[in-house]
Length: 345
Ligand code: RAM
Image (tube, rainbow, N blue to C red; front, side):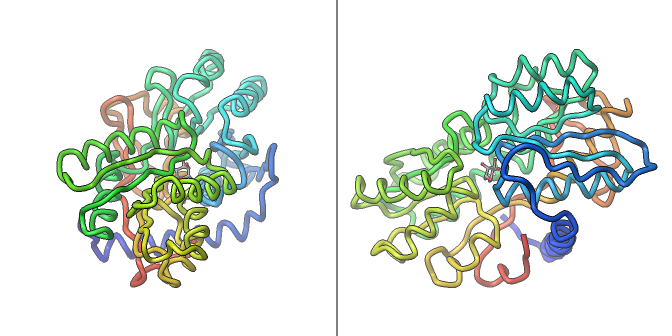
């Protein structure tokens, strides 16, 4: 993977925008709704963001990007969602948004199938449905806004762990919810990449922390106990990697068991600085939410319907809807000691 200065500069600029947006937005409730309202007098498109769960800094940042976009086009933004990352919790918020006749929903799905009935009812009521971050089955939404090419996300993490453990030894995955489409796809692709190109790395376990801090912390402890020869952990979830880093940082395994995956710079900074973690990856979550909101608006306006259609996404420029009605944000990015100080999200 190449990391160009232009990309770094754009991430840093967006991080600054994000931190400003977060300051302006204030904190969100632990559950239920945080309606930030629209800027008034604009185009009036009503957009509801439903993350996997509330209280996850990753979604705070991505949804602040969503609000930034909705404010730019003068729509009305709200964020609602369950406290725990479960599909059942999301269904009720989809139903409410349908009853309210919102123009568009932007959803990170906790399960590929379980939301489809509720989403179907929303679509029957002419509500446009964008998935972002974690997709449903493609036939039960309008467009998926993908943070980065899944194979690229998988390869970035395999490259990192291979480098950190000298390309040999036992590793395990610490994932989010067992049904999360995004983590499951990345893990499948990581397994394929390891099988094809890293014959001396052995994946000995995959465990699930459900994007819950304490569960992920406990799962890390259990992994280390169960696999005394473990050389590394890959956690493709910002909640999991932060909890695992916290566990490792005060354990005997610090510096002996490598940890990488997908994290936010603000959650990982202290563990990079204290040597628990060398490097990890992510994309810009604020840009993801921003792009998802502009996609929702383009759908609601009838400017796009699917594959081959193009639209303008504010400061990010023009995008074209690709195969399977997917819009791709960009490349993943690697954070380490040399650059983590440049980011604030
Ligand atoms: C967590 C969530 C989210 C995922 C990131 C990397 O915040 O599981 O869906 O994309 O990690």
